[in-house]
Figure 1 (cartoon, rainbow, N blue to C red):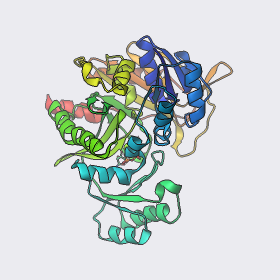
Figure 2 (figure 1 turned 60 degrees about the vertical axis):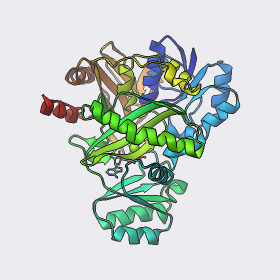
Figure 3 (figure 1 turned 90 degrees about the vertical axis):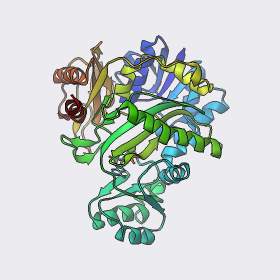
Figure 4 (figure 1 turned 180 degrees about the vertical axis):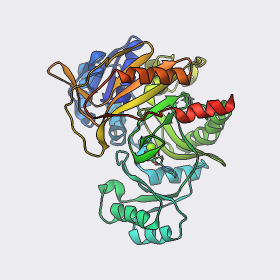
Length: 425
Ligand SMILES: Nc1ncnc2c1ncn2[C@@H]1O[C@H](COP(=O)(O)OP(=O)(O)O)[C@@H](O)[C@H]1O
Ligand SMILES: [Mg+2]
């Protein structure tokens, strides 16, 4: 097949890498330095819908997979559909699940999906009065898309009020912060379950765990994700089944009731609380960096799965039993991230990898034949092994040979998973 991947980060490199490995001819817009080794990159931004449609037609692609959420929330899948192009990703009505947290919470409530208790507000005064009665910590979220920066876990009432004021009165996130969701703080392991949906059924992929905080020991500011691993051992087969029954089945039933025809990725971000799994949020696309550990473990052809989803025929593909393997990805970022940081630094070392290690590029570009940094998260170095420990060892060994000025990365990716395995054995 000829497949177009939209986006240019680590997630998209993992998609492109997986598709190319299955023998497809892959195109990517806009791509990055690593993606350019395996796919033909077109200089079209992920937000340029007419440009993307033009590229898909020009290259006569059979399938387009949209990486980031913004184009999906803006209606990319609807537009591709109108042009008769096959696209994997929900239309605007389905993508609202990610693009409008207040809507997603209301939908979860209606569907009986376990989630944190909440209320939504558009007026600061009512938000403040609700906060004054809420126990701490409390979580304040901009309802719309905020590029991972719209959530504040507030330890004090002052911090919570400040966050709500920023969003509702100061217009900090523009339209996206006009509605805020205030919710109960949940405690427990955070895990992600990603499924492929054909409108009626969902096929769950390996459970994974991201590392949101910048520093070791889950300290420091929130980031887009500093590393991930899969499978996450805390998601036992019994828990996976519970999540399927309590989260995905009612979600699809609710979609059916509302006439939402959802064909694409459904990502459930959850906390495993003492009372069972609770959904934090849904995303309408693959996770980043989670995709960088899930796809190396997927022994099926993703393009074939995506087409089956688009055609509503997922049940015709029998899942391959999971192999005993694990993958672990460490994100190499630039000092200063998630704040401001420099760009254009040359990167040295093995930037490709081999069978047991894949170097996924996130913020890289080619400049005069050299690979240089072009973003805060630069690389996702992924080790693959027969165990989590082996995958971790391979990722860190490969990373030790890679360098650029100001490189920073966490040393403890996978630690919670390894602890969980140690407790069990
Ligand atoms: N109710 C909650 N309790 C505890 N932590 C939360 C809660 N909601 C969000 N978080 C933390 O904040 C992060 C971002 O929140 P999320 O709802 O996933 O928004 P987004 O990914 O759009 O920024 C989560 O990954 C989680 O670590
Ligand atoms: Mg999230």
